[in-house]
Image (cartoon, rainbow, N blue to C red; front, side, top):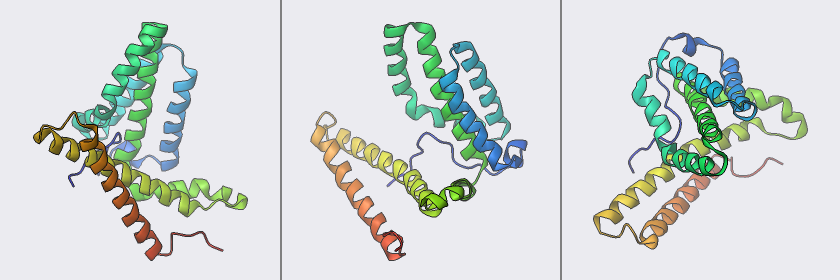
Length: 207
């Protein structure tokens, strides 16, 4: 199975000011960008925020290739959304919606490109710890996120591999040739993951 990135940039070691920024501030940046996507109604403001995030991303040393790679998976979806919103609500609204989605993607990529995944998961555990009194399990919550981040690229890679194989056999227009192998691969992956968790005593809730 070949590797596939999905939406977010992979960690790039470095010593930039963004790398040295405390994790909580990076979390706040991502949350703030999410709020911006709901509150900002002017596409020019969204464009300026996106440009600022792009500059910050490049200052990390991750490079334009990683930035483009983080955005590429959603490009087609953004085009469809943009065209539909343009038709329904006009160009300014369409531009604002597309730009706000890009703001969220680039902000999240800025976090993952400058912070090792283990630190992010540790930060998630720390943030979720106050909810332990309400019955939450921060470690399981972080584990769920880790599994999700591992599973999405795997499934995306499985689909790309099956699509290439179907195209080579002239079956790219056959839904069964695309869906069935991906479904089987996904179920097998889920079963292997479940067995691995159960072997480590993580499959069932604690009594």
